[in-house]
Length: 248
Ligand SMILES: Nc1ncnc2c1ncn2[C@@H]1O[C@H](COP(=O)(O)OP(=O)(O)OP(=O)(O)O)[C@@H](O)[C@H]1O
Ligand SMILES: [Mg+2]
Image (cartoon, rainbow, N blue to C red; front, side):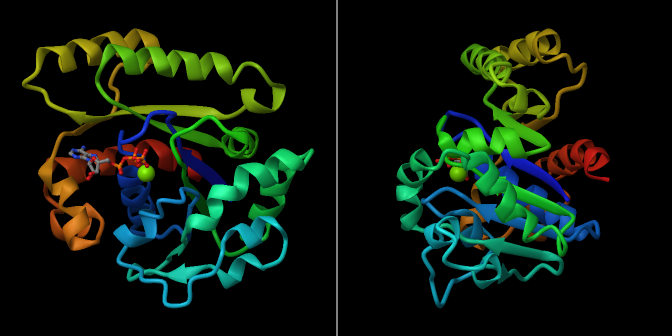
């Protein structure tokens, strides 16, 4: 099972939107996928149209008081299930701070779902935290959505440097991509050009600024289900093609 975390220390950059669309795309492509929402704002399952009729405290998972299967919910998309987040996760940092090996804890929990799933996608809260550090140790890929601004390139470089600090973090592969790109704006084009050197990608994936992506909140569904031929849906397909080669 491969593990991808959508991570950026900045908020509102498209982590959840991207995690949901990529999870859907993977499942559509025949890959058994579990989307694990680790952000107490709990948007990912909502975007997938899943209503949790019997909400459980997902913090109990980390306390070892509940099997992971109890939290898993099916989505309307075959081969795609989700572990919703809830406000109990706001206490996760306190819990992990007490655990000497919090990285090992996450690793153990993910082993429990590895038989059924080929791909595990995490939607993260915007922060460097004990939890994100556990993800750095246990994930195969960090997918990093970046706004097309000079500051985001700087924060990406900082993340890359930060990941050098520990041996267990150095093996995680980075997949940066741009979100909310408006090709009519010179600054966006300039940043994408600069990015070629900084992220070492001649053709970085660029998700356009698109009201269809905002409409996911109205449809409560991934973009591919209601605007499959849009540029934004195609850009997410392109991102999935990049990630897919590492999943297989
Ligand atoms: N490419 C895009 N074009 C236009 N709007 C977008 C795009 N991507 C995301 N959005 C909108 O931007 C807002 C933030 O997106 P999203 O929730 O995915 O970000 P996030 O990084 O997960 O935020 P948070 O850090 O709060 O979890 C949402 O309203 C979403 O609909
Ligand atoms: Mg989010």
